[in-house]
Image (cartoon, rainbow, N blue to C red; front, top):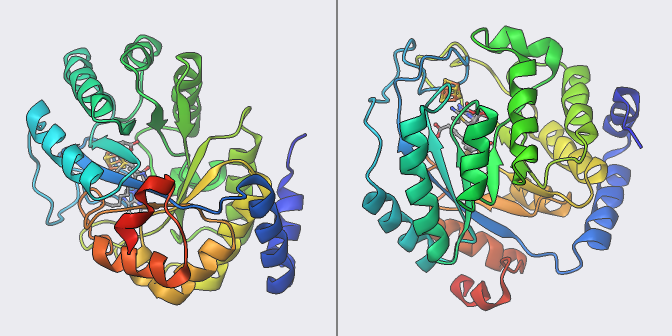
Length: 318
Ligand code: SAM
Ligand code: DTB
Ligand code: SF4
């Protein structure tokens, strides 16, 4: 059954207590364990990207502190993956600042995927747009998830990104599905979109058939030098509402509290977990910007009495 934008807007307009109660009930019904998934990010190719995404510090055309580097070697990636595994992470996500990978890039990423899988971690990659054959090569290598965000509503998209369009994103998502991989797809809140545009974005995600298994909800990290550097973001309660609505409209997805957690603070993050967020990016760095220290996250989860995804890993939190 499809979710309409009007239905999502009605959820936004519910009294906060009512919305939180509905989201918490949906969460309990679908995730009785109530555990939190930990995903660690690594930038395997940083900066120098030809795209013009208005939020992104890695776009070559903006003057940010990010320095372009060449792609990491397989062994450097595996070293970071071993450290992530040691710290208790469930999933290792490799990100590249590309519009789309070249075929020889795919060969190298395939070696990384195989090595990371051998360590017993779930694998995810986010490399930009994929041709169907490239998606197939990644799927054949055993890649578990591909991250490709819709980022916002279709009508707001062109205000933020002009070098590709919404349909390009949808086409890549289709190739990822056809190659048999699970989809990680979400977006960014606080780029200047209206509530109606946030509602349209959530409805679009919920109406993907099937909806994504992983839904990263980022709060904009305003980076100096990017066009959105001075963007004010949203009221934190509006962010919590968005998490709750993602949970209600995509009941079985892992909803990931993603970029922007440092600015949200402990109390708002706790509300997000109550609203049904059940995944975080774990590790001191996202791709180029800072994330809460792993120690601080372990402390937050322990203070909230939240377990991490694999029971055997709960001990890392105490
Ligand atoms: N280049 C690939 C692409 O665009 O799909 C993969 C990497 S890109 C950095 C992955 C995602 O990071 C973007 O879709 C966006 O949602 C998120 N992101 C980038 N910069 C951000 C920022 N300043 N604040 C919040 N999220 C951000
Ligand atoms: C996602 O939705 N958020 C992550 C991951 N998918 C690749 C990236 C966040 C990037 C934040 C800005 C930076 O660190 O460069
Ligand atoms: Fe490039 Fe991805 Fe950043 Fe856009 S979000 S500029 S495609 S790295």
